[in-house]
Length: 171
Image 1 (cartoon, helix red, strand yellow):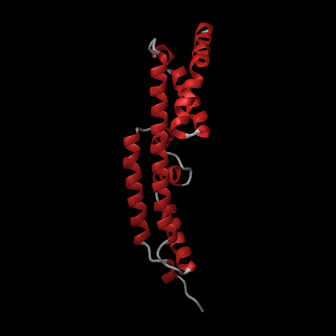
Image 2 (cartoon, rainbow, N blue to C red; image 1 turned 180 degrees about the horizontal axis):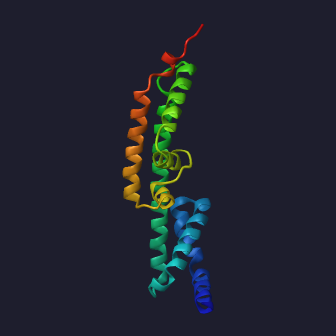
Image 3 (cartoon, one colour; image 1 turned 30 degrees about the horizontal axis):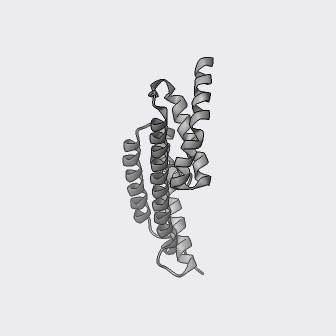
């Protein structure tokens, strides 16, 4: 194990700056540090599989890390936009937005624990589908299906119950 640590340290020392330069040219200096960390974490996990020409392999890993990060950001942005439409709505009256939010939160409480978990992991905790899948112990594809079904059940539940404005009686 000590020999592996020494070889890995030598690999890191030899290629860290080139991997950083590659990442910085694509995502900027601040994000490049994180890309380098992720790249070498993958390299450590797959050290036994690494080819003798390690720099191209490391740059390929860095490329995948950058692509995965960009996809995750796109998903987060899309979800944020979707949540804004849920909470903002077209109404200019603040009370209407509050009523819609309360209706949605009440509908959320009526869902199963499994549905609530996938919705909140993605919407409130900001996890990607891959990360949420890891949390609940399923594949990314299965999580996508669960998330789609949970969103549909949430909207169905929100539509099924009368709106709060009908429940409220003002004296």
